Image (cartoon, rainbow, N blue to C red; front, side, top):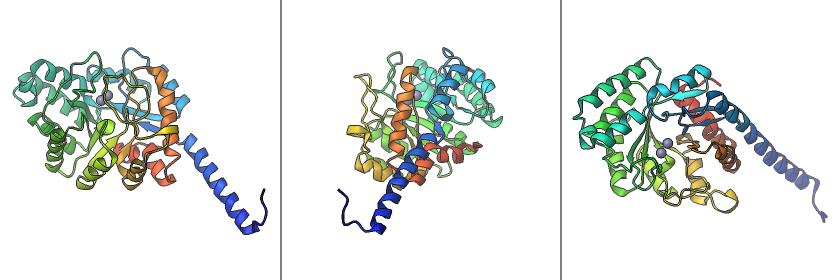
Length: 310
Ligand SMILES: [Zn+2]
Ligand SMILES: [Zn+2]
C-alpha cells in the first residue's frame, strides 16, 4: 500500500519508471549493425534483407562465405545495407592448403591474391579485411579444418598494413590463448593508426582481461558474436557475457560502459532460424546499458568506422 509518500517522491518514482520504459522502447527500435554476417550464396539477398528488416538490423557485414565476389549479389540488392570485407575465403583456403608458405608470404599464388585484395580496397568495393582465422583450434566450423598461425606473422603484418593504408578494419578470429594474445598485441603495436576487430571477442576470455587489453591497445575493437547464450556446438569453446535471464555479468557491464566506443554487435548464424533470437539477446543486453553506450554498440561505432549514412 502506498501511504506516507510525499507527492515529490511519487513524482520521482513516476519519472524513473517513465525513463526505464523510454529506454526499453528506444532500444527496441534502435537500428542495429551486425558486424559478423557472412554473405552466403545458398540464401537470396532478398530473404536475408527480410530477416534483417524483421529484426530491425539495418546494416550487415564481414567476409562472404567462399570467394570475395560472393558479395556481389548482396551489394547489388542493397548497396547501402551491406558492408563487404575481402580475404576470408581466399586467404583461409590458401593457409589451409599451403601452410607456412602462406603465412610467411612465400607463396606467389597468395601474393597475386593480395594484389587483387588491394585493388578491391583501393576501388572501395571492399570495406574491410577478414575474417582471418589465426587461431580457431577449438572454435572452427564442422566443415572447416582448425588452423593456427602467428597473429603477427608476415601475412598478418601485410594485411594490417593494407588495412591502415585504406582505412578499413581487419577482422581476426583468434582464440584467447596467452601466446596468441601476445602476438596480436605485437601486431597492434606495429601501427597505431589501424583498427583490429577481434571477432567473437576472444570467445571465452574474461571481461577484466579484455579490459586490460583494450586499455593497453586503443585500436582494438571487439565484436560479440558467440558470446551470447545460444546453444553452441558442444565442441565449441565459448563463454557468455550474461548470466541467468540474460543479465550482463557485472564485469562485462562495466567494460561495455567503459569502452562503449570499442564494441560491435555480430550474429554469425549458420542457421537463419537463430537470427531473430540472437538479435533479441542483444536488445536485452542493450537495455541494461546507458542510452549512450547502447547507441554506440547498436550502430554508432559501425557508423563511425564505415562512414555509414543513417
Ligand atoms: Zn569466427
Ligand atoms: Zn565468422
